[in-house]
Length: 270
Image 1 (cartoon, rainbow, N blue to C red):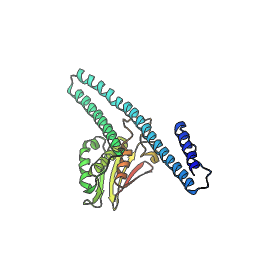
Image 2: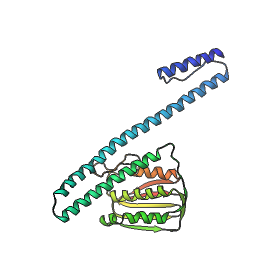
Image 3: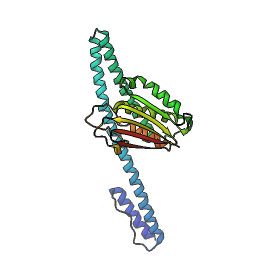
């Protein structure tokens, strides 16, 4: 048995030094040694999986930073141009128009940064979510009120139908607020003329008409997915991915379905 252990030790040393992927093996007749080899190989497999996950996260973060840098440059460059025009303009109507554009670009940047912050928060291994019994209808109304002028500007008339306006759910208030904000922001960015929110039993359905011709509904919750790449929306591609992560962090479930030009996001809560 001592000889078998020495052989295993030499294999481990070589494997570590050469970063080799071969499995630790032994021709021993001792069952304990065979089990030891199996356990060691299992441990190496787990280490390899964790390394792959860490590498994937690192690559994702690099992609995210590169994408965010590019996406932020667009509204920043635009704002710089409109600020120059604002300084040169003497007409109040023109100046107000430029101020509105600059304000819209600032909101776009704010949303990107909030998406990035939430993404970092959700991917922090030390982050723990606190939940309590909350009423979701007042939260939705408050979020809607903050987007009133945006809906008016896009001539979208929202339709809200709650089966139970007193509905209480076990959730995180910040997450529920952010989920509603992201979904409504997504409608304002990509939606057409109609938008509805229907609550029944254990789910909420957010439905709207979409203009995106190349929308891939199965990729909708993927990080960095931005729909039709030919469209020039400024977006981090994190909004709906964050929605999925927040929903699942509360042990809820979310899915998407596309019927003709009508997109629905359905959230199932507990």
